[in-house]
View 1 (cartoon, helix red, strand yellow):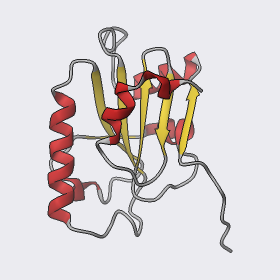
View 2 (cartoon, rainbow, N blue to C red):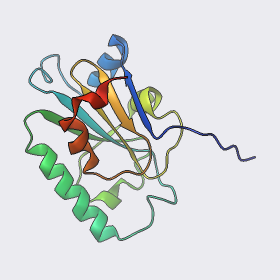
View 3 (cartoon, rainbow, N blue to C red):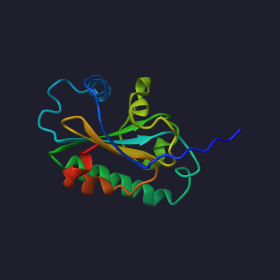
View 4 (cartoon, one colour):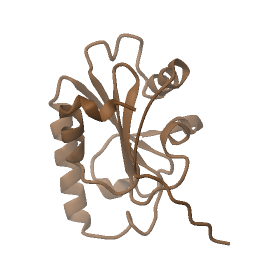
Amino acid sequence: MVVNLKAHRIKRGELNVEQYDAIKKLLNADEHYFDTTKFIVIDFFPGIDRCNSSGDRAAVIADHEAYAAKMENRNDVKQFFVYQEKKGTEMYGNIKWLKDTDQTIQKSFFMLHFPCSSMVVIDRSGNYYSHRGEHNLNEVFTIIKNNKNFQP
């Protein structure tokens, strides 16, 4: 049986204290790790699907490695690559991945399997902007620039 659901690709909201603490714990951050950080960016890989298992692998690797390097050079952002299923993460090049233990990210933002990958940006107050499913990597820079994106 196939069930189709309609879901908005963009979702905004606010994390409660318990959710935010669980996310920080997953990201292996002590209580002061995010003190000078305005945003947490999480790129989420749900596992292999038709969308993320095809295409020009060399271009995908180059894009993701360049994106990770740009993010690393920002002082106001902590960026993480998180996976639900590890198989397929090698398609993104030399990227450090974290396992979504206890499905913390999945349960907080991506209850359904959205094709390709998804991303979420969380501000220091726990407000978030998520793009569920295929997206442009550089979209995150536009989101960060415009704080109005975080209003639920």
